[in-house]
Length: 186
Image 1 (cartoon, rainbow, N blue to C red):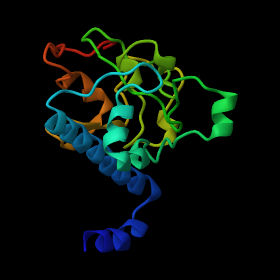
Image 2 (image 1 turned 45 degrees about the vertical axis):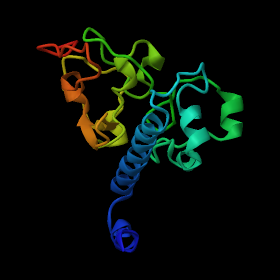
Image 3 (image 1 turned 135 degrees about the vertical axis):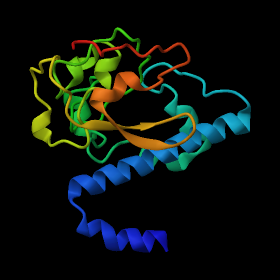
Image 4 (image 1 turned 135 degrees about the horizontal axis):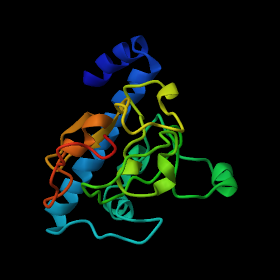
């Protein structure tokens, strides 16, 4: 019933909105897979080395998540594209690794198109994937300006939401996180 309703409604939505909705659903599935892994094994997902990291463990136990690993706004690169450029970083419209442990003093990306190619932890999150047009992904961002758009974030309690880039420093990233009074660059 829900799929039928979604099938009738999604064509009426803009492509960007449909991609954002699909991204949220995909993150929810990955988050639930992580929760199931912890419930099934009694321990957190083991962290593997690049390029497998933690997702390979989830794929072994819950094969269905292989199809939801990438946001439709930044799809998985083709084999041809990977042969041309196998870098681990991506762009606003190319899938990339978002695996980081941010700290309060992390600076934000100056290049909102490619996240400064992973030069720090928080820069990986400050790419406007949703809630802003592609024109928001400027390559020379002034950190004193408000960040445009947002990214979808899956939380430990398994809810997923759009987080405005400007508010990323207000999220609780880990148990030792202390939100700064003002985000870096302001």
